[in-house]
Every structure is written in C-alpha cells, then in structure tokens.
Amino acid sequence: MQPLAPATLSDALDAAAPGAALDLPRPLWGFGGVHGGLSLALLLRAMQSLVDDRPLQQVSAQFRRVLRGPFALDVSTDGLGRTAAWCHGRATQQGETAVSATALFRTAGDAPARTLAPRAPTVAPWTRCAEFAVPREFVPFAQQTEIRPAGDARPYAGGDDAELIAWIRLAGDDRAPDLARLAVLMDGLAPSYAAVLDRPVPVPTVTLSLSVGDGLRAARDPWILLRTRTHALYDDGWFTEHLDAWTPDGAHLASAEQVRRVPRAG
Image 1 (cartoon, rainbow, N blue to C red):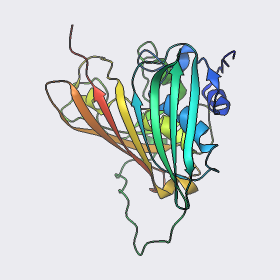
Image 2: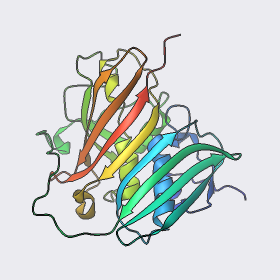
Image 3: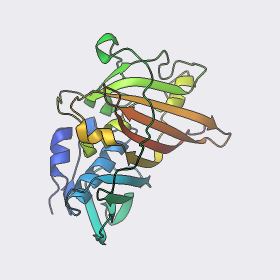
Image 4: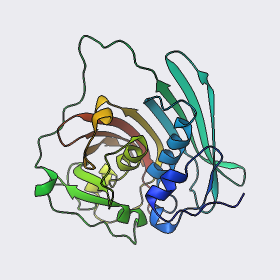
C-alpha cells in the first residue's frame, strides 16, 4: 500500500484509521522523529473507530524506537464488554513495532455521590500571557503549537524548580480538543525537567499514560492549561513526569505520566 503523506497535523489525524499507512513530514517531528503525542493520537483515533466512540478511560503507550519514514497503524480489540472495551495498537515500520499502546474505553456508569478532580492553579488568562517561541530547528513540531507560559519558569533557563505551567493550543486550529488533539497537547510542552537545564538537550519520552477527565466532554475552547512537574531524577537519567490539564474555566481535562530519559553527556 502506498502510504499517505498528509501535509498538516489535522490531515494526519483525519487519515488515522485501522490499517492506514502514513509518512509524516518533518514539521510533525519532535526529537528526531514523529512527535510522540501525535503518534499516540493517531493510534487512539484508529482504536476509537473499533469501539463505537466510547470515551477513553486510560491509555498507556510505549515508545520503543523513533518513527522515521513510512509506518502503518495496526489496531485490534478484545471485544466490547458491557462496561469496558480493551484495544491494542501498534505503529509499525518494516514489520517492527515502533510505538505500542493499550487502551481501556468505558461505558457510562452510575454517578457517584461525590466527584474529585485536580484543581487548576491560579494563573493569568492566556490573553494576558506572552507567547513563547520554541526554536523550530531543535523541535520541528514547535510550529504546530502556540504556547504562552503562565508561570515564571522557562525551558532550558537553569531554574531551581522542575515545573512548567503554560497555556497551549494547536496553531491555526480553533476547535476545542477532542481525544486525539488532547493527546497531542498533553505532550506539547518541553519536558518539565528542562526548566532546570541551562542548554537544549533532547529528553525523549519512553512511556506515556493518559487518563481523561470529565472536562473533555464539555470543552469549548482550543486553549488548555497544562502543568507538568518532575519530582525526582536520579543519576541514571531516568525520571517520571506528572501532567495535568484544564479548560480555561477550570474543568479538569486529563492527567498523564511520562517516563523520560536524559541522555548521558558525550
């Protein structure tokens, strides 16, 4: 099958389907290959078509090798249960798995007596926050997003706290985030550990687990508020990053964890 070569992020998402073959251009690349959040979004879009558009409860993805050049989307389901459906997906190149994911889709249950969700930090609205330019030569995917920091920290500024808080949206896209767009945006900021580094260093994602909140159903604005934090990094360079996202009115969109790795110098 001749792979499709979508020119834009929206075209890539629209082309995602079971069995689709894609070849994404460099503007859709992150650290050395296809952006991690985008590759997960493509698998989610393909898996959704197998489960009657049930809402996602959680997805866990493993980034085994960098996606460069043509790849195919291979997705399957274990069957639709009454309350849950499990799906599996792979992005493969020449028969080898580059990205794999397992997703749990749910059906609506009885409303609990009380709901709980992380509270959004108190920050200025995106209209009062200045845009932050990410060097495209370092991360080509930066041209796909508009980022407005809402905290004091900046990536690669040699700060003391490994936390980043920013408003983020897809550039030129006025639609509120659906599941696929949310997956892209959750991986749209620099790694939070970059806030304590003093020079650009690639910090690739190894795993990404995403759980969706109630706010996604009612999202109406393309902007989301994203907070990312690294609690600890040890001398082997591996660390876990925690992320939360909210709508501009404070509804919780999603939580995520990423396992990342800081390459050794030299």
